Length: 491
Image (cartoon, rainbow, N blue to C red):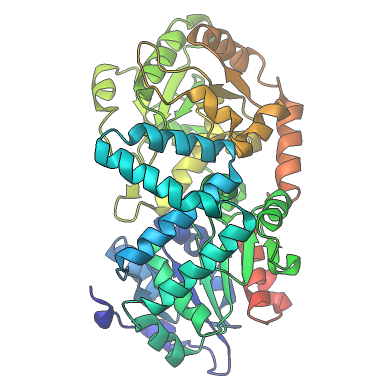
């Protein structure tokens, strides 16, 4: 769909119930499927109705989700990417590289090494050397400020469309909120148009590793919503020009489902849906990104072999949840050959990689009913700790495979995950042989590391794991828009 074809499409119900024109308007930008989960499924945006007009600019994974949003908000428009000029994209890439070289976190160093390794031809190596030469002079706080200002000016002067400028001039929103500050190239044109017009903008720091692992925040937002006090401190340290009062600690709505009883199933119901025996213990293996965890199917099969040998512990079952964004077929052969390994359904719409509502419920109950979880340095480890489940982290490479320059053990040195390891809440397993004993201990001593798990979650989240992050998000957005929440809306 071209930008000229994008038109508001409010439902009849929304039109009839449209708030008074005197109310301020908020434009909510949902640039990825997980933002729809975080702010639509949880009802975060719905809570604003009655105090603000809520317009949604969203990617559209399918017609059912479009209709869901149309029925709930004042207007809904499709968010589509407006192509930018090559020079702007190239300049942004140099800023990203300079930021990584200045930050020089473990994740940034790993990415730098990987990009060097991937430059295999003479042309690729020359391009890589040129990029380094261009970015290194700016790899400082001052240099980044200068280069970022050039990038912002270039983006404005060389813009290819005035569509969002015209839209926001017409609508005059009090706030533009971007539901994900990363992986949102599709949102850049809309957000920067608001900023050029002097409209306040806010964004949600999408995940706990983003500040040290996912590059620079290009757009100079006015307000930020973060998971925790630790993330707030980290954000302010990296971007000291951000006024502290404009960073709101809300928790993350993606965890709200875990603490809402309406989403909880009985063990029998859960096992019926995924094809497991409710009388036998369940180990959950959650896979990772194929480029960062190559040959992971070898690790999974090795763990299945270890569990099959432990017949004295109730014949434990292995349930594998493949990373929803893994579009490869790498587990297909294992799935067909090893019938003792159960692969969980993963109901995500592949367009814009969007979790469906029933998958959100399934995932919550998967965490609730497993005996322990296994993964490679994943956010799932935090969720397992929330449910007081033993966590085994794979710290060895897939047996019999050369995956250089990748090393599973290296991920436990990344800044965001090192704190998890140092807390003692998880067990990093250094070999397949060691894994056998760790699996047994997880079943025989489920309380092992319980206090460490509790302490980690308390330190990272405080009192924010209460199922009400969506409420705090709505409060923060109202505050950013200059509104005070009406008490009856927050019961």
